[in-house]
Image (cartoon, rainbow, N blue to C red):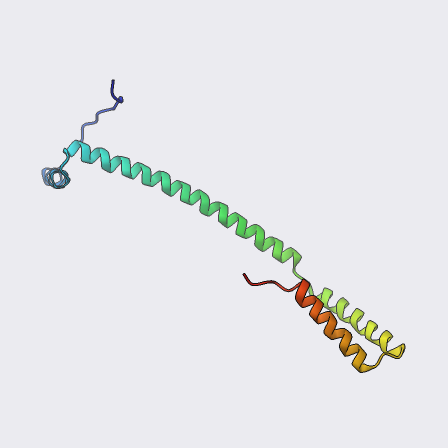
Length: 124
């Protein structure tokens, strides 16, 4: 036995009904089949739209979480102040212990190279 279907009666203005009859004839199907096709496609479109809205909501929440994470984990001005103070103190200690400017520049170059290799973001 075939699928169970429900039948509905639709009252249309004669001009509108004629339009749908012509549309159905152009596709080589009955008008009732055209209505079924239109309603089914519309129903599927609504389901796809709901799924797309759900995915968009998930993406928006993920973006907000990423933004919150980045905001919470950004270096603050205080971090840079502390780092600068520590850096200057280390330079002073090196110079106080007799390190030459060339030795300090060499250490800075090595540190910059190390940071470049290990901490800079790599482009894909």
